[in-house]
Image 1 (cartoon, rainbow, N blue to C red):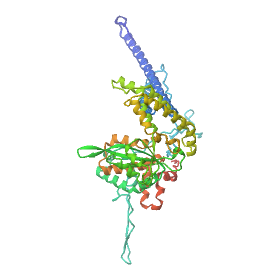
Image 2: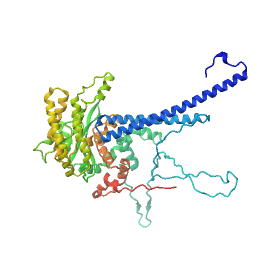
Image 3: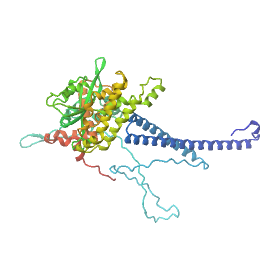
Image 4: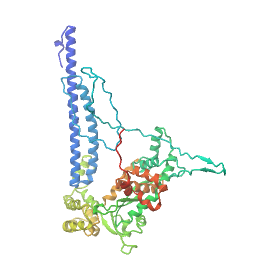
Length: 550
């Protein structure tokens, strides 16, 4: 409220009344502003939520921008997280401001409908004491009509405990022989770590990408000081204890007729520097053609990327290998190879990515706005992407169908598209110079055309190698956290544990719970029944959680 000095009253009572009125007016303005701000925050959060849903639906239905949309979805989810948090804070501020006056209506935020808490979680009843007398007449003859239950989710902090295995000794009074129960077998030497703790240690390091030094710091804050060397000793012992399971997964993966193969870099600590090692993965996934075998992933470690490594990994295997155009696989594709040649199947996602980069107008505009030099954008590249996307649309229709049906649909629908694409690429390449970016991208496919068209005659073959890339995703996230492997032996241990954890995830098994159960049982489990502990069998046999009431 603005007033000139001449308009102010001269007597103290009138001046006090004017001050009170001004404060009331300012309070109303503050409360109205808080309500408007809460409404705006709610609207922004709802807009972000709708954008995220639209982006997910577009990617699920069309999938044409898959190179960008994964990053965009991550950004939208983070933006939604921030806006939801801000909306909640503004809602509380508006409610507090509205409570001070009756002239400003309370802001009511539109919350999404919350799903009920899982039934298997235990329930603890806390009965609020009711009045012993009627609040209206004071009578004591009360009869219960029902109850209202409000559920809140709570967590019990992690509890540590020490289990004491007591073995009593007895002496025979007749023959003076001393007897004692045998010592319990521990999964690791000097078994001070229980299976649940050991499973948590391994999963945190290789599944959640938490280095041992960070775990040791957290345990110390919880009152359990454990040295880094002590934890590292248990990691090595745990990997050795799980080696039989790793061998069974390896045999299962190499028993497939078709594999996905890929590799990624992994830093390895060396004297005064960091070398670049490799983690190789071979994935068996028969789900796309309705195969009965469960999925699994096999990892191997090497200090370099020489072709001798995949040749050694697959020395006794033959079948169809879906991989990129890495030259180290070439020996596997030789016709005179023993025990038999490996059939090459190229990845259409790799090929599409090369031409998509030349048709990505949005990325070029962003780089140009940042002052960076973007790659040239070619209309012909956009046409190539659109032609390839027709094949991806056909593949989405036949995913999960038997091999014969997939081949039949591909011969009827995809084969004409592929033939037209080859003719168009050949004509387009011949019009361009050999050093042209688009000519290089087209030559990548044309030089390997038999491997790109192998999916037309074999219903087992997938269009892409994305299955192997998904298996490597955790390593790409983890190396930003744990920085490097400490040695070649550390890389080999990582390969073993990644094989177990990724395989468990592919079979919808909780990796930590599965590892804990396996570590608790493997010592006394018959070797002839070791397959019962594999993730896909364990996931079927494990008991379902039961609802508990207290």
